[in-house]
Image (tube, helix red, strand yellow):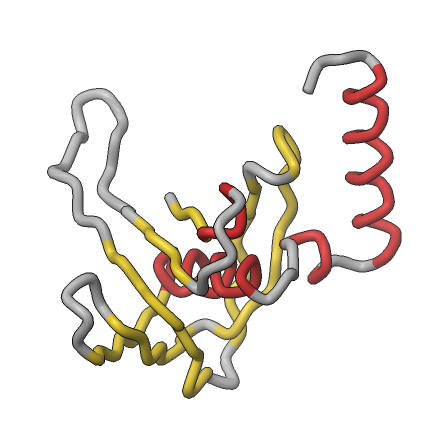
Length: 131
């Protein structure tokens, strides 16, 4: 759904997201959103909870609480200033990717107990050379 530049070794504040459905029989044309220097300029007081996962922590998922709606200011692919108000899956995705740009992973939003359980599982899978 999304990828931040630093996940692929680029130290730029750039992210790309595409929430178009890719399930068999439900495919939509790609709708990529490119953001350069994204910044959350407003967030709702309402909270949304969704299950999140990440390429940085393969195969691990957890419910994450985030503001339900955010407004993001950024430069688009064309270099023009833009704003996006996001809710639902798009809101979670953009917050998740901006977190990456700030060095934060989805597990950092979890209780220490849940975070440690996930990180221990990942270490165990690494030792078994599964990931």
